[in-house]
Image 1 (cartoon, one colour):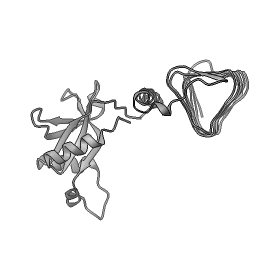
Image 2 (cartoon, rainbow, N blue to C red):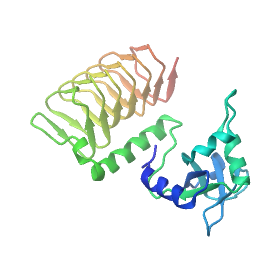
Image 3 (tube, helix red, strand yellow):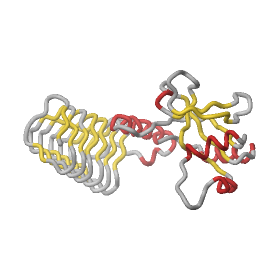
Length: 251
């Protein structure tokens, strides 16, 4: 997930006239990604190093590209081709340019990185598309950046935010507190529950007066009333009847 400067990327691509242009970004952990080595003066990509064990560069491949139609001459029609095969060939032929991303970039690999991406996306939306965010209304209160789907139902006395996303057809009953939470489609949170720092999967149900913190639910997880969950990772279609006080995977 990133800010996707596609117009700027296309402009750079057309200006330099090479077969491809790759978006790059800086990172503190380049050894976890594909590193791009480029000419600092011209921006031409020299070569790639996949997950280097020693420091090569802080620039990595952000996974967003612009290509000219001539790219198809490098791709066989009778088999699948990976970008890891095509891009080094283009760099070797001096046909690959780079553009540095100045906005945010997050690779979605874990629930934590997902939540970080949600936080970044909401912050960007506050400046770029403020109409997508939800403000306090008569009945419930929002704090910070909150996004509520039009089909979701929010009860009276709820406090939402900061960094809350409530998906389609969700039901949040009276007196619920949500903070740093994403509810995917069809989730129900019963009255007076408190949910923090959690990702709740499709069609899950959290019971009344529950306290859920730092947890990740798969699809259709059911939590009975007055349950404490701290750091629970719950696989789909599970029913929880007892407390989980320490991080645990429920299989």
